[in-house]
Length: 471
Image 1 (cartoon, rainbow, N blue to C red):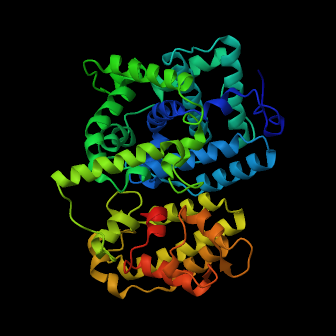
Image 2: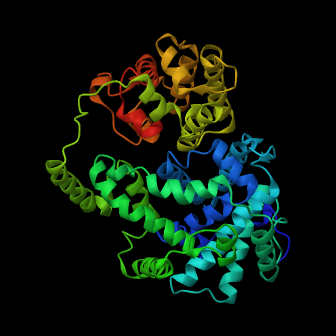
Image 3: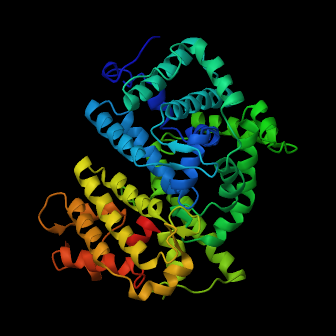
């Protein structure tokens, strides 16, 4: 195994690729979750996550986008792979800053990007071992080659990872012992994210069911993840070694392995998992439809015992609630550029925009951010508090929002006929038209589209479509 360049990757992700098969299995989520904690322990990555990521407020969206991005990177078509890696590099190039200790971080840092790939490889190897399918030597070598190829696609070469598998393990141990820290991002993932993770889209209409399930599943997921981490890292970070956690962890991994081998393929593939995250995607929830129906029945029964406030008739949000549910994308309690960048990033990812249209979208959001700063940032600290927003929301200017709406219409209207049809609408919103908002031809005009966007972004009107995209 030697130096790998992006030009030498043509056949690595062919039909015999181990990684292509793995990322289409639900158990891959175990490896990704574990790897995410190890990534967050790198000071560069941890700082970038805390300052720019929506992984706390929108974990299911983040997971869905990660799955889509991974599928694109592993696509046999080199054009698809190249387009996605270029998009990821543009995304990462926009993320830089200074952490609370005054240290600079940059999402394009070569060591940090190599560490992301390294954690995914090592977590995949661990996942195979714990699910009862330990990789033999040749298979592990092949998997390592495939992961180094991903780094080569992103960086242009794979030199930041050791050239051989034998050299990889000392590198990995060195990173664990000498480079990783108990960052705020690690603590947020283990102690806040699992405990407060919002309902996935499939159960969003059944909050009572989700609350009951999360009360059990949240602590269990944290315990399983911690028990799967390297023991020396757990000791360094003083992570709790709960009684029975290792038994629970082994059981969870073995169960995922058995499920992969025994359950129907229609249940255990990425397409089914995508429909779980996006029930309206591709025409319904697929094999999860029966679970969705049962969840609805359970929620109805639960509401008979503990009725929840009726929000069916709610058409608008208070400024305070709109700030929390829509504007504060990173969940840190204030509005800053990373929150608006997250909105642009979600739209660009969902529509797979090219560089020119992506730049137009970011520039439109940047113009709106300048307006918000000018009108709301009273103390000049570069961010807007919930109180500052609520106090001035009625008098906010809309020229920046109009610019965003115009760009959003243009990038959604892929056939450039100045109308958004049902297929274009579905690609952006993952939901069908609302008949009362469309014209007689079953399309959106530019003016109707802009009106709906402004109505939602000003908090005047709830929108199922924009709720699914941004809330």
